[in-house]
Structure formats: C-alpha cells, structure tokens
Image (cartoon, rainbow, N blue to C red):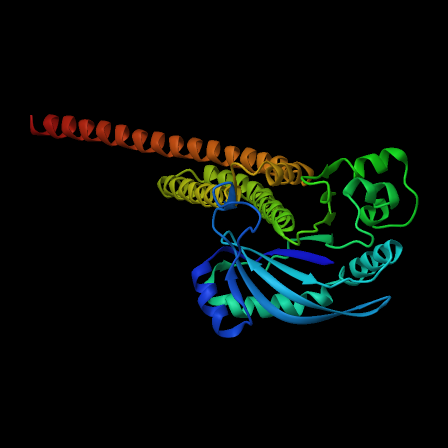
Length: 357
C-alpha cells in the first residue's frame, strides 16, 4: 500500500541545493529515475529529488501498521510525501479491508503534518517564495507483486472483484458505476495490470518496477500545480478589476504612472505563471514507451489536467488583454500630454512674440 499526499510549498525549489541539504540530514537522497523506460523513450524533464524520511507507524482500525516514508521534491514547487506499508500473506478480501483501513487512517493530517514540517525544515533554504497555502492532492496505490497461485491479469479479474478496492467501499455498485471504474485498464504483458481511477489505482507488477506508480505521481503533481495557479488567478482577477477601476477614477499624471506600474505588475504575473506552467507541462517527457505513454495520457485525462490547464490559460489571456489595454491607455495618455505640452509651448511662443511686438 502506497499513500501519496502532495503539497504546493513554494514558487520554485532549487533541487541541487535540496540534494546538498538532504545529503547531510536524511537517510537517503537521490534523483528519481524511471527503471522500465529507456531515457530516450520517457524521462523526467527535471528529475525530482527523492529523500528518505525513515520508518513510520500508522494507527488503523486493524492495528498499527509499520512502514516507511519518503518524499519527492519537484522543481516547480510541489512536494510529494509517500507512506509505504508492506502487505504479505493476505486473502483478497483481507487485502481490500487493509486498503480501506489505510485510507481511513491516512485521511487526517495527523499522519502527514510532522513529515511535511520536517521536509520544510530540511528544504527551507532551497525554497523560492515559500507558500503556506494548503492545497493538497492525495492518491492511494495498491501494488501486488506476487499472487498465490500465480495467475494472469485476466484470470485475476475473473476470480476476484477489484471494484471495492477501486471504489473505496463495500456497498454494491450499479453496472454503470462498475464499468466506469474499470474503464481505464491497461496491460502490457499477460501478467501485469494497471487500473486507474480518480483517487485510487490497482497495479499488478510481477517485475516489481515502480514506473507506473511514478508516472501517476507526476500526473497528480501536475494536477496540484494547475489547481494552485487556477485558484491564484481566481483571486487575482477581482483584485485586478478593482485596481484598474481605482486607477481610472483618479486619472491624473500620477494615475497614468500607476497605469504603467499596474501593467508591469500584470505582465510579471503572466510571465511567472507561464514559466511555471511550462515547467509543469514538461515534468515528464514521453516519446517512445507506448505503454507508459498510454497510462500517463489516461491519467492526465482522468485527473482533468488539460481542463485545468485550459482554465489557467483562459485567465492568463484575460490578464494579457488587460495588460495590453492598460499599456495602450498609458501610451495614449502620454501622447496626449505630449500634444498638450507642444500646444502650450506654441501658445507661449505666440504670446511672447506678440508682447515683444
């Protein structure tokens, strides 16, 4: 069982500095690499830094579970905290109950706050414009590496019902709901399986690699960052309208300068958000690994990442248009002042000439 919780903690993070800081304080620090995919087929744009946070315990309805905690730090300001709990020797029904118990126990902040505080303290000097805003995403992965007896993915689906594991509840679901939960199902070999939903996934991975889990984590990190900037722009647009209106009401020489200052601040906001969203878009580069590319694309669609990205771009377009209008208005005001100054100088020259005559 792997439980993820992701947080936006800064505008950007210096990963080289995180590596240097973490090497002196954490049990293990390394750059994350995909193991299954060739670098030319699929790779991280800027590989996140993985930091070991040591053993953890989680108090569940079924007792206390011992596991380990790790964190992954992304350059665009997101950190992912992972709690991993080994599972062995359980029947399928017991596995489902264990997953539900882990999800319930990890739903509160008690399990996460100490780890996040520790991570903030460790990476603090590497954070550019730290944020205290609590925007989070969470995800539960159930990864099975061995089955007894060994069966193929299709045989497993025929023998057990994985819907309760994906739905997070034991109550029977309608056929339509069951179909929707099983819609995003992928296999590369007969023995592996990946089934994705909005907030949970089941992975059958006899080879033991973590590439699919890592790809799902990146998609969640992209979703979180776009959600953050969508909320940021939602808050900025009303303030922008108020500032524009206030500047227009006092349209004097000082107000004209405020127009230019406001236009520059909006341009800076657009540039910063555009830069970050480009880093988010390039977090994972996909070229030749068809299987991982399909899973990654399905996860982005399932998490509605393109929709969030389009919403951010629409709001940026509004701010760009406002910036252009403000710049044009400021330029027009300067031209009008220049014309008035020229006319005033002509009048003064005429008056001086008449007085001399």
